[in-house]
Image 1 (cartoon, rainbow, N blue to C red):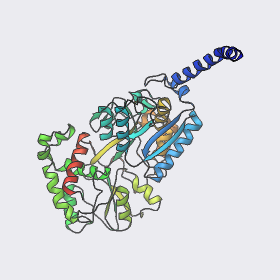
Image 2 (image 1 turned 90 degrees about the vertical axis):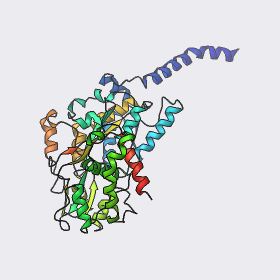
Image 3 (image 1 turned 45 degrees about the vertical axis):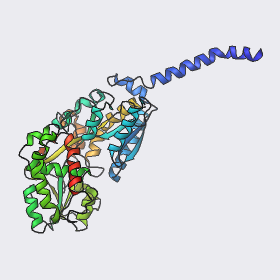
Image 4 (image 1 turned 45 degrees about the horizontal axis):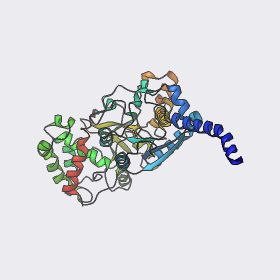
Length: 406
């Protein structure tokens, strides 16, 4: 009887505690993509954001550690960098979660993504919603086709731009006085003894170079802006395979062995094994020279008619546990302070996605004071060519591996 009375007395307290717990659980995911910013700030405080991003660069890892310290100090959000080798693996994990109905409390809150991976996420409804249009700094973003469309796929606010990129070539002026200015000149260059190679697709930089060659060689460039049509794929790509059939036996490795990534080609350039390295960062050479990874005689260039460029983004999965915190992190990464640090080769060297006319004088000065040195690609020196539709990457990789994979 006494135990029953004690339980009865305790019921109001237990009921109140349950109500508070339920309210806390509900408020933890109350934020929507278009919520008022103050509500996002309030809900985000105390959350931990698991940011799945490539972990293969010390500079990028250090930059994200700096960002983590800032969002913790400024917003009370804990940022954990989950280092991944290929974001496609994370997309696969999200697909698996979707298939079994895990629609909340996911273990990925934010992810670095673009291209075919974003296209896959959008097609399979793995993104949360148009949060990017409602970030505090979204009004400072450049009005750019590559920001509105990711590999020809409309972004529609489902991912927030993080940085710009363009395929560039790095060479040593003490070894190569006149680097090749097109796919045709590259063929002549290796025929005359020039040393070159590229990462085997599906390595990102290798796939991008193959797309670059296709853009130059095909007679049907208009087809590249559309989803791959298997009925015409052979005709569109025929000049590409004829070119690679002739090029590969003259490459370092004789078309039988390949570097694993662009960083490998940079090391090979430094070691004197090749004459030209690849990067998707126009300022990569500056960071490498200052870091002692390349001699100060290197320079950066692109082909005469331009090279492929794009924008990379961050997105929030539909089942993220800390959506508000993820919005705070995405917004911070878009801030003038974070973008200026990111654009500085001392820390990363990744071109900004901001329209500098939209920032104040002090913020603009931070960008203008960045010393890119003589090793970076001169700003505005060559055209940026559009990425083919996202579906071309997988189609080209599959065909390349079937033809040349070991």
